[in-house]
Length: 203
Length: 166
Image 1 (spheres, rainbow over the protein chains, first blue to last red):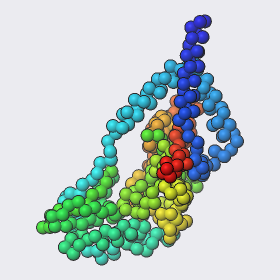
Image 2: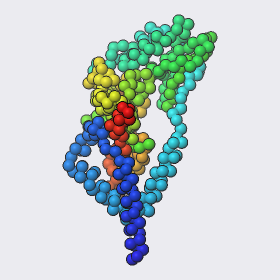
Image 3: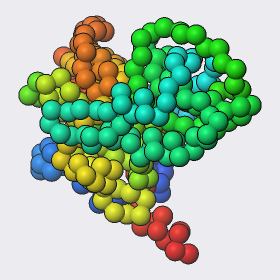
Image 4: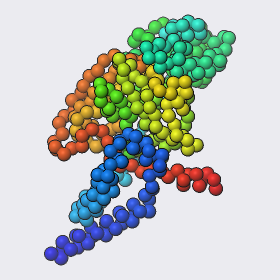
């Protein structure tokens, strides 16, 4: 029997430490977040939800910690190890444009003519690239007289799309990849001009 | 990283969780990004969008979030000329809609697994095909039904303001 008392006593001590740590680190839910979560899940406003969330769940958790405190310690340790391994996750790889991604040389007018987006509900501006028209305009403003515009391939679920610019011996100017879908093929990609300018994400 | 609050999608008359963020692509492509405040580990992106599929087309119809300056954000914050409905023509990819009971809770991103995944293959905002992947059957009858976030930490805005004002 004495072992049981010792076991439960350690459980109470673990609970005290866990509760103390929680009190020290807990943050009140900001009003903006509360509104957002309420909008996502209207049940949060119900009394039954609040009782379950604020009373029943904490009491059950406290009892569980006292009774099965080794499991609580194990889960905490696992969480700490998990955090360390998460930090080692690879960053999303950047997609460097290559000459093989070039599809077809185009003019600004040609691109704009085929990039007008239509919607039966009128939920998009009647402009080249629709809601991304401002991004397109910014890109065009940066295109120099000697630059070439090429449709650009980007691998994604077997599809490639985008537009990009080539500038003599220039590399590094970036632009957004605009949602132009092209057939899944690699067209001729030779050019007398210099290097492809621009980067994009690859997924 | 904590499991993330999902986007919401109105699909075939039902409101479902959507474990895909089409607005992220919009921002990545150079669309206006008003800089959302992230006040919870369960919502690093700082907003929740409500989407609809109407006649096979993907629309953003509602947005909740807070900007870094503390103002509330809506669809009009990003698309001032289209405050009620925005056609997501920029989005090409696969939308994931988890269905059924939870098989495994993963405390990271949209990593939790469910009995089924409904995938919508979207090209330039238009749904081209749908498919269902069966991932298994939950062993417990009491397994959670539908997507939810298990735990999160929140960051109080007042503390941040105090620090900035100091």
